[in-house]
Amino acid sequence: MAASLTWRSMPRVSMFIPCTMDLLLPQVGEAAMILLKRLGIAPSYHPEQTCCGQPLLNAGHRAQARRAAKHFLTTFWDDDIVVSPSGSCVCMVKRHYPELLKDEPAWHTRALAMAEKTFELSQYLVDVLGSTDVGATHHGTVTYHDSCHILRGLGVTEQPRLLIRNVRGAQYVPLANAYTCCGFGGEFAAKYPDISGALVRDKAQSFLSSPADLLLVSEPGCLLNIGGYLHRHYPDKRVMHLAQFLIQDGGR
Image (cartoon, rainbow, N blue to C red; front, side, top):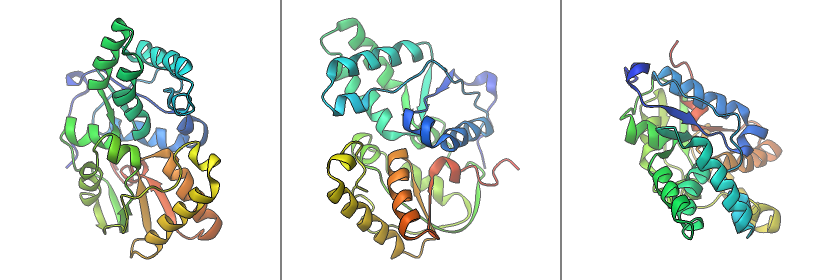
């Protein structure tokens, strides 16, 4: 059953919605907020939040990435917990902020503290709340793709699967080559379109070869990349963010 929690007993939880999601996938951010509210959490949203700085760091603009990191640390500093439905952004906060700010002791201390209280959505649900059944329902067969940053950067792989397996009516089947990249990789897809296209084609074929009628992901970049390929070539096949999947029929 969904966790029985009172709003007053919970720490201050804030939702970080990454820029890609804010611009292109607002429905995923809304689903994450709905999900937490159904579990008795009262998440706040800071309208002054901006990009975590990951694209800047990947492009080699370390000074600008440090400015973005400091803005993030200032914006979310008073929160007890920060949750995001984007593992790559969480990986940026947890793994890269401390390194990026290592030469500035006060900011480095803040970065280490923030890393301890920032979580990817499924990580927060399972590891912090101890909730593996959120009361969702889905009738069909589903599979799951492990996004690179979530798997390798955060070590999160079983948490999404625990949540999926506890959705009533859903049958989970493993995805062949679930751990291989979908080809997005941020600006990698723009710099190396042929390689990116080959990777997403292979990922789609793994899904098409499975008995699943729905592919689940926990990363907005993967959702856009795989979803775009399927829309162009196999419009009858569906890909969905885990947050959207977990609010299906829940709380009704």
